[in-house]
Image (cartoon, rainbow, N blue to C red; front, side):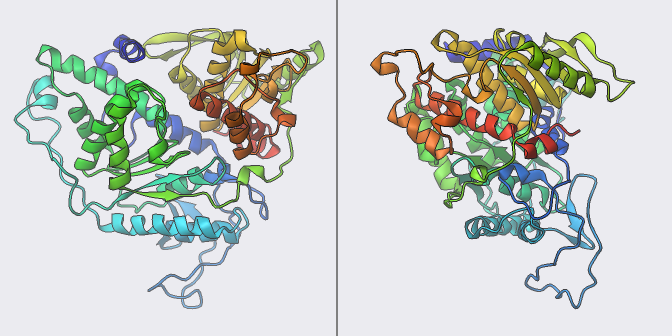
Length: 521
């Protein structure tokens, strides 16, 4: 039934809404816009976790690191500052920065801590970078071959490739626990791709799959009663837009995703697409205990054989490095706290006199209207009920965070077993805020990272007590019961991990570092 609901939801979008081929599809902006909002400003001498993925080094001069066949610093004049090209490419003087050089510069300037394990991963990314310099993807058929849309997309006379090109380098699958720097390393690789590569895309995997399901739905409509496999033209279209794909947080929790992933990944590889992925899990652990998991096993084999699977766990969790807290979370729910947060909203909303706050702004998501109670073009304010007691999905939350870089949520209640659906939506919303680098202000009944916790004074049945798996996951994420309490609300393996990760992210999003760097446009 879950897969049926997913497909039927797409029936509301018009065929004309299918993203047009370009270097970065519209859905990709859910991630790339978030990246763009992260400012370059960062204190020298401090190094934090992977949230610094998009922080550019200080304009203060830092040493060049000599590479093979490069003139030494004494032979080459040092440029005075680092710049970017129009597409965000980092360069220094006449040299385009490579992943290794940029990582060394960030360590030298104090923005990142030196880590031998991360250096080993950077060297692998450097190898792939060097291979991509000379890589020529196979030519794809012309998009327009006939007058009819059907012929243009789905001509069956076209022979499709049955294997990946012989000259294609292997992509990378980077996995490890939260806080090991996966996103930072992948973003560093993406930003230092060779300037000749124009067809590239960096996207959160969840946003990518939303885009894919829209395209599959449009393909089925275009194919009509004749039928056929819609994955092939969708993969061809994606390959035409980008032959280097970077996926952040690759995970599979949805049967609708699981059933199409093998064919999708296989066809992307056959069209010469090079993929770099980050994940919290080894491929063998993806979609554990999922419905019809046996049908997903070929996708696991594909990841293990066609990508270089690399473990990032080095024993250092950058999210556990102590950091100062910022006053962005207000509890309990008192008139004083409500007044304080409303004053903050008024301050943000009045920053631009030409963009005053309006009530009931409408934004369009999946062909329907979503009403924002009060907002400017950059700052929005919601009641918790407006966000989480409505039938909203991850796609809705991603659209909200794409539109608003700063979000206020008022009156978040403590959630028990009777509010599990609300808790799941809130977790999904937090994930969207984190991915989009959203600045978040909240008022809540209890400290916001304890809104899922059990009442210590309430007696629970034995099977509702926190289990060993929950304790293990919380320990992996650096969480303690003193900070987030204990929760028996979530039981499944994926649920437990999503809960603990949301708590970890809430703690991080309440830090002074996050408050100073998030929400920038």
